[in-house]
Image (tube, rainbow, N blue to C red):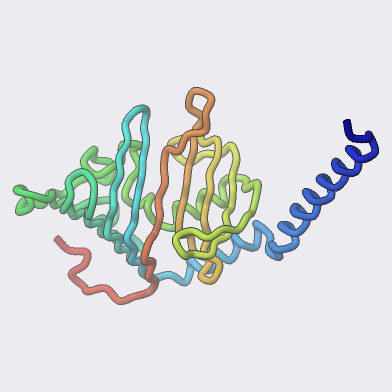
Length: 226
């Protein structure tokens, strides 16, 4: 059996190492949560167009859905989604001023429809609407909830600040935890994760990742036409 003093020294050493790691992490983040949010707002205000390959996961109850879109956004209110992977592959949706032009992929692609933004054909299984896929939705989460932590990570070659939010909500749901990934150079969101407590376990219910993100590029005038 080792001497008591030796055991105490080991415990003290472990505590010092943990404190050093914690202090080093804190010092490496020379920016506050409020400053990241402010710079994200400022960066978003300078955005006129967005293009991305947008990957989206949703869960509602026992149902799940995965989509990959070509995502085009032009301020103030034009959005085009092309379904690359997922249900109804090949479908095109164009949103503008509360209405959606919907062109189903496959054999019925020659019949475009005009739908309300809350029509079951164009909402997610979580009732999310097309405008909720913009950066404005994410920034609203940051401004209407209380972020609890700031970390750093690398996500798909993006060097990111990660803003963590505990108990929080949007217009439809309450969340037990959220993560928002902000790219360090542009200060724009590149990913969002939302969790609910289901049967006592933190469960992912929504995730989106903006891949190949391009900002302020010129779109063809026909982009938002069907």
